[in-house]
Image (cartoon, rainbow, N blue to C red; front, side, top):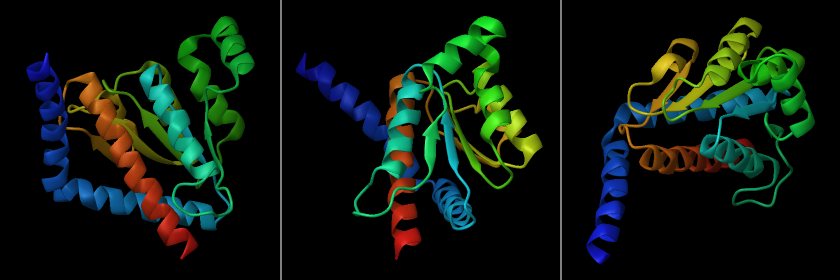
Length: 191
């Protein structure tokens, strides 16, 4: 069992090592931070969406902005779009689960806001539709996906396509990228 545990940890480190050496990813993180800071300075908001583990990541990252990361500071406006279960279940029942995030973006998204779409495959239809709607409205769209980027790569401004096809390793890297962005936004916005 120890060999298996070491192998899993080594696989996670291997994916993160690729990110460590990828200067294009570093530049995209910097661009995302600049976009988010500008959004907050202009009175805008962040929205996050995903399914399953990616929904958990969406909620986690939204909480880092509305709560705190390292600094004791004022909350920043961020929301995971799935946390209103009455809305989510009503829209899924009355329309389609594919439309839940798209309808929330129509209701709340404003030009200059930021949408984070999170999907390990990059093909989650409800996230794709939300991103497409966000682009129409004028939101900045940041996507966190796996290696290929899926359909989400067509409707985003910044694509973080983690160099892996293994869902757990992708999700671990999504949180890493998200945490780096949270830390740098907090440092830049509040300094």
